Amino acid sequence: MSEQRVKIGTEFIKLQNLLKFAGAVETGGEAKLLIQEGAVSVNGEPCAMRGKKLRPGDKVEFDGVTLVVE
Image (cartoon, rainbow, N blue to C red; front, side, top):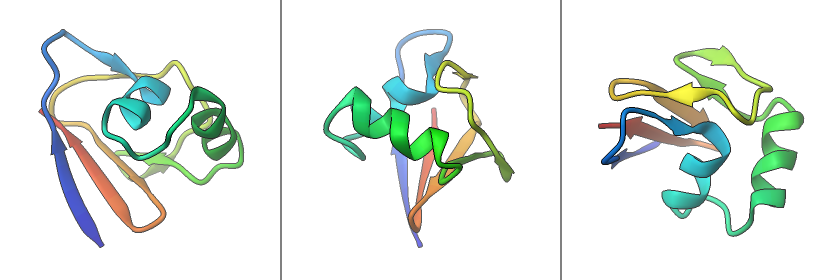
């Protein structure tokens, strides 16, 4: 499993935007499908909310990749 740290310059970032910002997906539609299919977990819990607010310290996992918000 690979881990990638993603530094944000705001208080929070929405889940689907994080996936696009980190380059994990190419489009918002692709992010939406991954999230709706239950393929994404946040802090170890499955998450189906595209607009979930992520803050520094949160971890997003999918398809063998871990994104850590900083």
